[in-house]
Amino acid sequence: MQQPDEVPLGAPDPAIEAAGPQPKTTRSRLVLGALILIGGLVMVYVLWSIWPVKISEEPSIGAHIASCAYASPPAPNAPATGPLAFDPCVSVFGWTFAISLELRLLWIVGLAAALGSFVQVATSFSTYVGNRTFDSSWTWWYVLRAPIGMALAYLFYFALRGGLLSTGTTASDLSAFGIAAISGLVGLFSKQAADKLEETFKTLFSTAPGSGDDQRGDKLNMTPQIAQLEPSSVSSSTAQPPPIVITGSGFTENTTVQVDGETRDAVYRSTTVLAFSLSKDELVAGRTYAITVTNPGPGGGTSAPIPLQIT
Image (cartoon, rainbow, N blue to C red; front, top):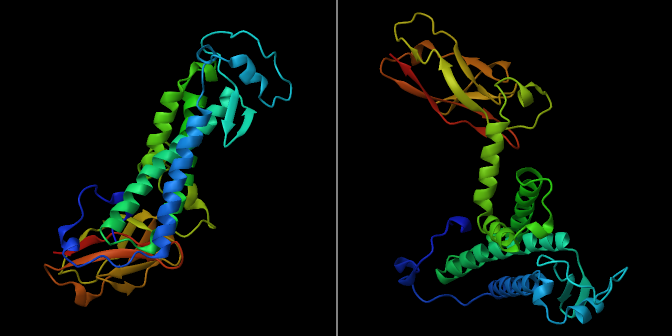
């Protein structure tokens, strides 16, 4: 099944339409769809309830502030300090309380990101159910979209507040609309945001081959990579096949070498160097072998193939 975050928007597939009537909707689909809908409505309501309101735009601000549950109540009729003085009162599901503008912005970040994730989840869910291709194995993908989007939005917000904005910037200097827009987009495109962060940090904090994690003997297993073969081609007239040196990364003492899918004995030299040899019978002119390396066990994998030519 195509991954939910790659689903194209549009009309259902005609081939699926021609496949016959849609099977009866299962209870799990109804429950999941209802939870998605209710979650989206709740997020919209709470975001609307906590949205900052300027004191100058609130006609009965004195009585409103007096109704809040302050630990140390301010003067109810205190005049507004300026156009950027915000009403601290919040009322959510009948619960009225006071909240600082800084904390309210954090709420907006999380709720806007969750709302963006809701758009992604609802679009994917409705498309797959409409096309009769929904698979219940993706349920946790839908469940975890909002928490992932919120976590990424907070990381982006902290980076912007801590590094890109002036240290003297206060909460009243920021636009709630701009914060909500950025957070919502991060939640909507959480996969792309995570990929961009990974790309950025790999570029900024890359280490040379053989250093960093490659020097740690207790590092986690990983998929090895081949950078080059030396030599990259072997003459068929060679009396004794020379050792083929593989340079790359992620090699361990358990790494194996495959020649056209057939496993060969490998000589481990370091986390970046392996060696193996061909037999005399394999030196057939015009032949090209696909060389791969594999780290067995959890977390390991097989590298992309690299050609070895017999000239």
